[in-house]
Length: 352
Image (tube, rainbow, N blue to C red; front, side, top):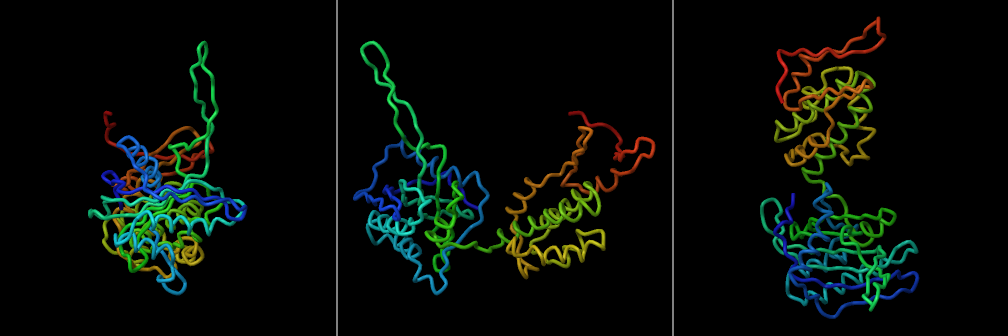
């Protein structure tokens, strides 16, 4: 996990790339951008906000032959070494992006290459390289004051509330391709940014494995447990799954199935579902791995633990004490009303 609260933009170099296939130009600034405190604060929010709001997997640079042939990896490595002028490296990074801007759909825009200090990663401060791109402009009005009236003037500019593309590259695990995060608001050209420019692939660390295995469990609960059982059992299955991850440091698949899948008929269904769906979640042949607590906590917040009924009534389950639902909630069928019902046992109502 990263924390960007205390991160500072140490250096900023701003350039502009056009679409190469349309013979649009490339403008490279010769000197760094000078920032006052107000601009620094605005740019920090503009650059970092998408990374705080999205739960993205870490990536790393990858090359089919060797990382020494990965252009961006080598440029970033040079930047972290601090033995060259950063603006020169930022220009080379922008040239690299321009070379990949050769599809007719790719939009031109401003490129911001930054050297970052004070990124907190796993409770340690590390440096980083930020590469950001703004592509879409918006119309806005300025007003000139004449002698007798205000005169509107239409201009175009960048909306600082939405970053189009961005990458944060951390000075961590450099020999293995560094750790990086990427955001892309304009998904129509993802290959251009993620694959061709960044040349990155998912980093299959414990956070990635925990997150994706739990996502597979969530889809199994919805697609298999719910049709085979009912909504209560779907919720309880995910309840038990999350609690199993929370109580263990290491995941072992056989033990997981024994603890979580109460209906033995669903065990072969689970194995089959995982085999069929593993490529989608990128968890092929994954049967044991260290559990990342941060991924478990994030998953718990996202998983719905509420049974919503068509009579405008909701029953909320407790993820901390799932045995309460198993002991005190019963489902049945009323012949007279021709409706299902839930019977809930309790001693007294809690005062809110």
